[in-house]
Length: 334
Image (cartoon, rainbow, N blue to C red; front, side, top):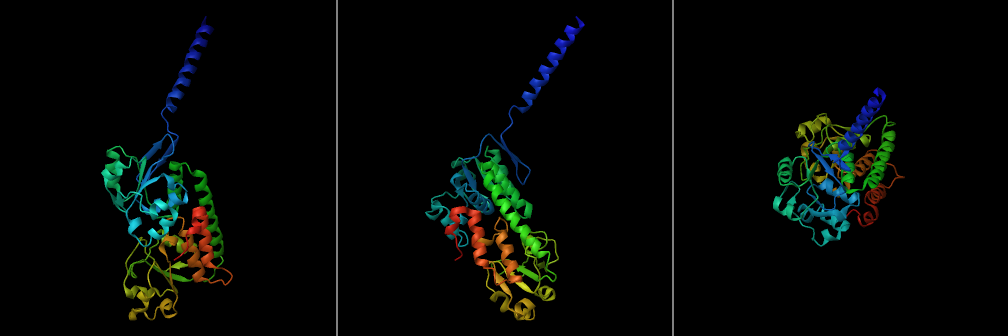
């Protein structure tokens, strides 16, 4: 009798454990990611309707070949000379200005966004208030930031999970990482590294990149030394500081070298005196907050250490073709 009771007790215990296990898995979603602000996004299936109000994320969606899921973009795509000529070649809806624009690259209209019935809205992490407001009315939001090397890849991986394009993301990430590894191996053999000063666009020649930035990573990957020692992302300096740093090269973001040449007080800076000023132009091909940071690093490396056997323009175009697939054939520097 005691044996029978023991068997019954054991059976009840095992059944209870099994039932408990089933209960624990009930309700779990097949897709789960955590955004830059720590919010979890859980879905039963990949999204079909996306509103993207952040340019690096929009760019990533085209690289992932998930553009058919995009139902809303930010209006800067239509108004910017740095964006429209290229996105219009990637998407005929943009060329014809048919995609709705319920916001800009920094804010959005909640009512206009909701009218598009999105499965998810993609925002920059700094748009926390908008993200909170959208969540309050039941809209799923994914926020991201791409200020560091790993954040660029994390964004690509997260978006691929949300859109069901993981295979494509793995292919692109593997390609870019392998290219960076090859470049690093070359950089490690350089005995005397060129010293480089970087300046941001729109005449901000005294706004540079500190060591806590994606552009600093590009400089390191290129095998050059960033003359700026500050940890800030985009510190501002004085002309006297630039003279003191005395870089071998200057790399500009979408501006004319004349911005430096016309400054008489900078005439003795080596890069200016030797006319070693280079331009990352057009901006679309070199966005350091996307996988195109590879183009930035490759170009800077070639400018610092010229190799007659390397056609840098063809290398950039090859990377663009790899990143965008067949549609990349329509993209070429203007």
